[in-house]
Length: 113
Image (cartoon, rainbow, N blue to C red; front, side):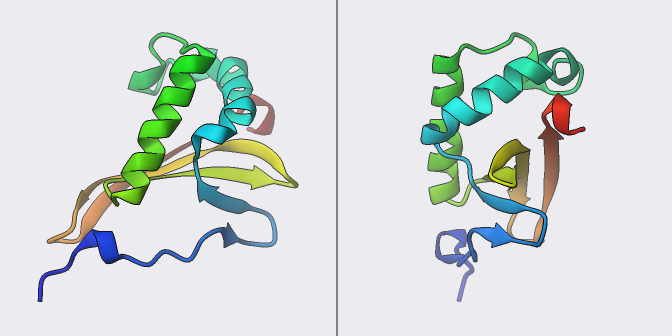
């Protein structure tokens, strides 16, 4: 029987004593976009998508793509919260399910670093 990531059951949200992680969703734009603007000068040095600061509308479109990719199990971009405050994104990307392997990346808003 072949493994299909579509049937991967993920226990969400992920809750620890300090952190809650859940799939990033377009409805999170009002929380996430201000963190991007706040952290842009740092993000642009490290993240290809941050070469130009996105607009709120562009950020919503990106979050829509992230959520669609999550549903399709192509990548997992999780929003991280501490005390109900958005603090950053964590992405699990570039999966090779046959190995299995992938990559992880994250960023936290400047005020939380």
